[in-house]
Each structure stands twice: as C-alpha cells, then as structure tokens.
Length: 146
Image (tube, rainbow, N blue to C red; front, side, top):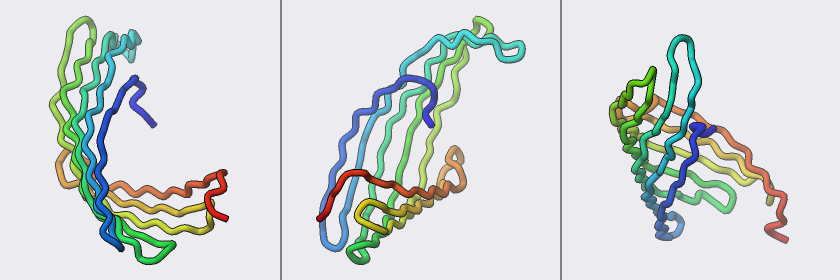
C-alpha cells in the first residue's frame, strides 16, 4: 500500500521496559526518490514527481494485561515536506503537511502462531484522517515455542 515511489526510511527506536509496561519512542526520516511519471491524465501531462520527504516521531506505552493480552497507547506525528510535480511543463509545489494521531491498540495471542491486533488512530491535526481502524491477524509459520 505504498506511494508508488521508491523510498528509504532510516529510524531509531528506544524501548524502556518497566513491567508490566514497555515504553517506546521512535524517530525517523523518510526519503522519497524523484521519478519520471511521463503519463497523461485527462488533458494533463504529468512529468517528473518529487514526493516530499517526511520527518517522523512517535512514542507511547504498551501494557501487558496478562500473558496473552496487551493494549497500547501512543502518539505519532509525521511532518511531510513539499511535493514538487511537473504538470504540462510547469512545476508546482504542494503545501507541507502535519499528520498527527493518537493511537489506541489491543492485541491478543490466540495460539503460538496467531495473534489478533486491533488498532485505532484518532487524527489530531487538520491534515490527518479523523480516524483509522485497522484489524490484522498475523500468522507465523515459524515454531516459536515448544
């Protein structure tokens, strides 16, 4: 579900366990690479597109309810820099965006190989979606426990 452009995202994560919680923080920089689209959409010829890079920061806490269940509270913020797009041989720049969200998550371990994850994000800036609900069931094929 990417943007369609190549990118590189170095980041650093810090974890601080304090049972039954784990505090976390992450900082990163997303580098998007310019590409020649060279396609016509309607009567608009789109040439070179340079998607804006992004500065990312998040922090929060994961709290273990028991050995199978946990919930997460957090905050994340992305500062997306200007995108430059060539349309009909003229270059246009977008505005910068600030996308910040409060995070609420729940996870439950069904089996040694299957989890259920439910995450809810509440946008707190005008550029962020009002809310985003994600439901995942990650399944591993590796044997992790006896």
